[in-house]
Image (cartoon, rainbow, N blue to C red; front, top):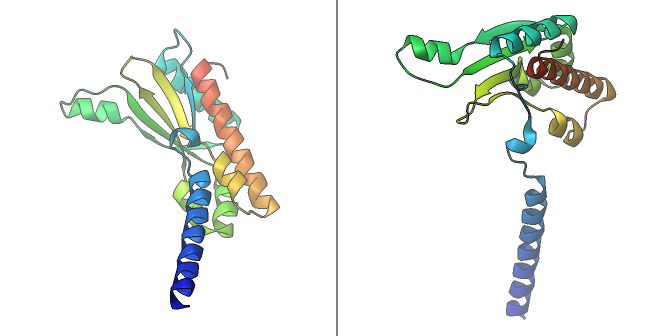
Length: 166
């Protein structure tokens, strides 16, 4: 009798573990799945892309709060590097809505768009898309709408930079 109970309990634990592992597997997202990534249009100079990025941000009421020209800093230190620049944008009113709901959202701020040159000399603009966060988190309507607006605004800024059109 004890052996049957032990086997039954073991089977239950294994079943629960298997179901949990399967559920966890479905929820795993790779970093690439969480990115919104667009190459610079053919022939577009990165400096022009930056101008378009900044202009579109102003138009859409997103303040450029930081620019980190990492490759320039590395060059100043005598280190060769492909282009790496980080642009950080913020709308303080939207930030307040998100952080008031849950302080953990502060870790996503300010919103970043990176300009990175790959090993094939292709320059990309990329950002962490908030789509997974928005779709997988139980958010009050006002918070969800704010997150969607910020996400869409950043994508517009990124596309303007990638195309050079603003």
